Figure 1: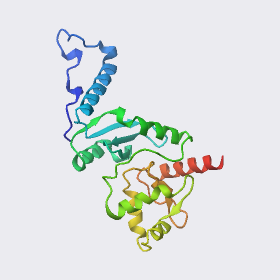
Figure 2 (figure 1 turned 180 degrees about the vertical axis):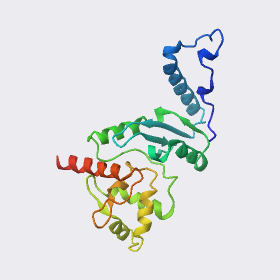
Figure 3 (figure 1 turned 90 degrees about the vertical axis):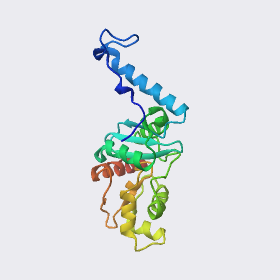
Figure 4 (figure 1 turned 30 degrees about the vertical axis):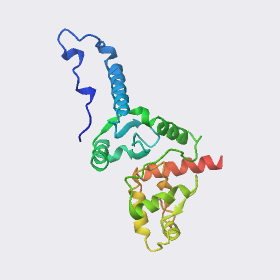
Length: 218
């Protein structure tokens, strides 16, 4: 993947004979590199060089990768997808100017934290749907209409889209949703009540539905 210059390429104090002016000691190196990365990210954004910003966050369904363009949140990925593979795909499909830049994802991280804490039932984040096209985008755009704590079958969703025989295509659209959690594909289940598949794993899907139904009943 091609990304803009990473400060991690800089030598560490141990690699710099005699030390470098201004370098932190070993105990503060990690903190200083993090600060340097933030400074680089802010500079890249100010210069219009930051195409896709990303950060990682912890959650009850495992570590998540969040990515956003200037238009809005463009990708939410589960760790099982492989973050490096996800970043490489973003570089190929959107722009090679991909950089870890947490600040742009502050609002997304905050709303997800509120969601998992049960204090948020709908997301208000601007979204970039650049990774969705055609029928899949049509399906994904309807998903937020399924209320918090509710479920809808793949078949019923196909009927609402005036494509009653496109049940499998609806399932594929849910399985390829680039914005899971925020665009709630986990609320779509099988007609027989089975959970069906989920990009984050069936256990994660069950946990999300249980969380929402528990909060809804409280």
